[in-house]
Image (cartoon, rainbow, N blue to C red; front, side):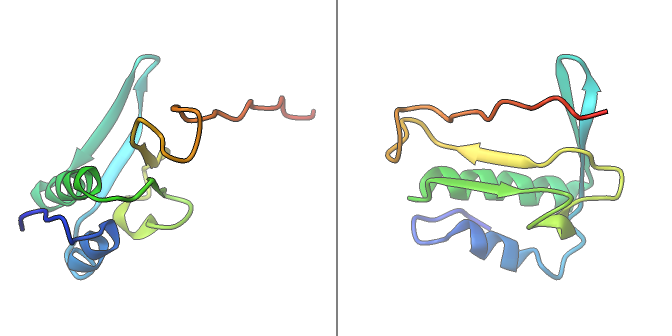
Length: 104
């Protein structure tokens, strides 16, 4: 599958819908994220990133506990948020939400 200007990231999800494209994404250590998958899973991720880079989409997000959860194994603890710069919809960078401390 070659990424093209007319393909969207939704198209990539549809193409891989009936394939066993699964990824495990977790924190390996303080500084490293681990992405594991078989050939199909890693090809899915590669095609998704290339298609996104060539598209006009602002940002995409998928996670093991939300949209796109079928692409993750049960061991996954992290998802993906892809955001292209410069940002056409903001100040040029992603605004990060501050985490609030959990109530005890």
